[in-house]
Length: 341
Image 1 (cartoon, rainbow, N blue to C red):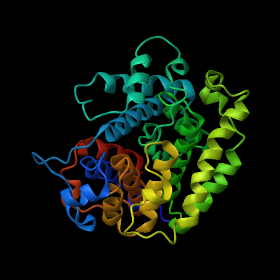
Image 2: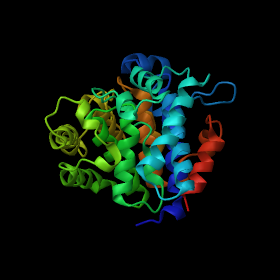
Image 3: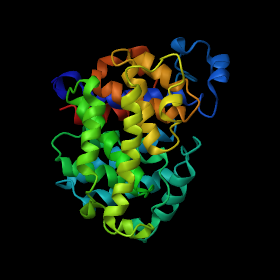
Image 4: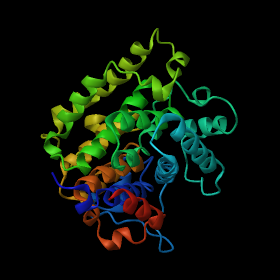
């Protein structure tokens, strides 16, 4: 396996996420024919730059909010639920009130962050029936932090999702997304990634992280914590099985959403982002362009594709002429430098 330090996987993943977000920003809410009319052939899509900036959406903004929360928590000691929940909650509330929160954020995130701005338990702010991709578009940082146990990584991934999206599928998809980023950063062969994720899902299908989630499950209509968590993992397993069936045969000229879904919900964002990456594991810009030229939640799909590609290939995946104008570049590089070592 390649060492994460040698290839600067954290820098690669974070810059890749932001690049995918910026590339997909203008194409979200458009179907493929209209994207092609607007942008030309998808393999030649240019990074949109205005005023010398490639602007991103709430996907990158919330990724940075989560990253700041992780940094605060780990500066204070060993990563643990109470130590993580408060700073991430505060960062999400700050994002909610920020004048830069003007990039068409999702209603679930807005509603939950409004409720988090106060003294109520975070479990009471969580939108228990939402499994939107806002849960896992922002989770990549926890897959990049070195030195965590599997329990810490999984618990933190699910906790950050649950602060806004409490549906069990949102929790499982976030856990799997962080796991994919972590494995790729450590040098796992992309050809075997989906199999490893399916095995991980089966192994965790009956595990409810009560230490991290508390009594969140009681807000659902499930009869038990076990029933709650299995519902989420089973939906993720179903989409991973669809991905496994097509990852080697999918036509790269066909919209990837045709195979694994439009990406508005967490498990489909994971699967379609992975598919775009796996179609072009050694051609990161082509993978980003394919992800951005989709009928679905293009910025989130492309952001996840960029995180996977950057974790796999490292910082050198991204040409300087693409990386230099990206919005929030200095902060993304600072977190990359923190976690590349």
